[in-house]
Length: 143
Image (tube, rainbow, N blue to C red):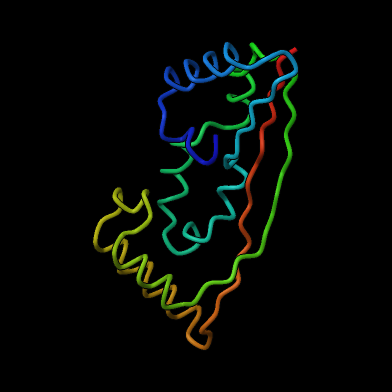
């Protein structure tokens, strides 16, 4: 499950985890790539569009909650990952102007405009932008 559990309600996540547990063989693994609430603080959009952090925290279950929801599995491991991503400033601007990030649908036009202005001001002299992307991997094992 790669960056998708935030699209499910808690009830549907639990159903999905139960179904994964049911179909996995003994010693099978369910791998979930997600963003912890700590990861979300480092999201690039949160810097320029601060309201998105709160929005994402309601969408992404925190790791403590995920552990509870995955309690049917015999062992749960957590691994954290950070990578550096390079992207052109124009690609970011294009994405922001088109509201090409799912949490942007919750922002007002004014919030989008203000965030874009701040982004442009911050990266005025740069064409290529490096950012750190953080993810959390949850490995749930079935004995």
